[in-house]
Image 1 (spheres, rainbow, N blue to C red):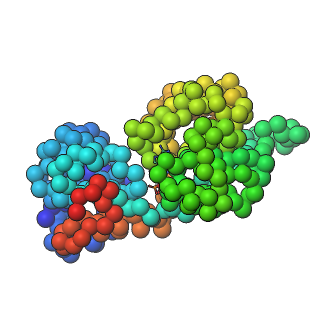
Image 2 (image 1 turned 90 degrees about the horizontal axis):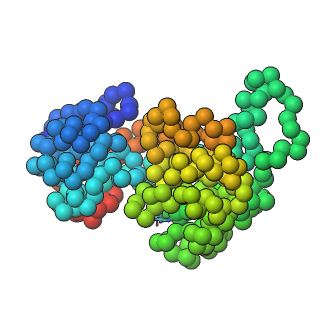
Length: 318
Ligand SMILES: NC(=O)c1ccc[n+]([C@@H]2O[C@H](COP(=O)([O-])OP(=O)(O)OC[C@H]3O[C@@H](n4cnc5c(N)ncnc54)[C@H](O)[C@@H]3O)[C@@H](O)[C@H]2O)c1
């Protein structure tokens, strides 16, 4: 069987090959960036592993034998899962390789923003020890209302961590059972209430409902000086609107692990702003979690090769 790896950001595919080649698979790879490149690589394959390459309806339409598309990661927004479903191709993700690490990264970003860590560190290294006292934008989490959008695996871990800081925690999730939210120690709230919080943190997938959920209107509803944290997907936020509100002081700080364009162009509106902290989509890239991710993704395809029941199918195809 021929397995295509459409793109990857690792040095080699040694972990994947160690799982697939003993099963008689040939692993072919590329660094596809366009649907045309992806189509060329995958059309005659039996299985596909993908990181960010676009797998749209045209790419799926051209697939002659593919039984499974496995994504290196949790979000599957680079794959047209409805087109795959219509063609009987299972789409699998790896839902659990990095939950605690992404939750840790969320708190790290939140604390960097509330404690003004990045600017204070830069000031000291530039020879400026004297801090302004009192620091007007420094906040303590126990006095903040934190709004968590998305109460899935990562959102739940973020709530667990936030509880230790003692502030009020509000959660919006249109699907999660209210009882689960209340049991966690947070309070279930509407999306409007979330945007009334001092800090908003996003933990939902990129879907038609969530894209640009943070926009000029929602940012205007937030209390002046509020903080936005995003470790989910960059397209949940209207970057232009966020940049404007950071410049006006309506938003006190933004702390982001994801952007709507990755890597961002030099003139991206959120680059170069003092109160915007950006990490390059690294919340889940420790050596441990990347190894688990790569082996789990290869194993998802290996299950199909061995004719076993697939796990973590996100589009309902058995
Ligand atoms: N920065 C990173 O490196 C990184 C790593 C892993 C995951 N992620 C992103 O984080 C997201 C969340 O991961 P997860 O493991 O918690 O996923 P999950 O599927 O366990 O949880 C997502 C939650 O969002 C909820 N949701 C759906 N639509 C919503 C809406 N309109 N408003 C509020 N909530 C909504 C769902 O009901 C679900 O409970 C992923 O979709 C992925 O895009 C980022």
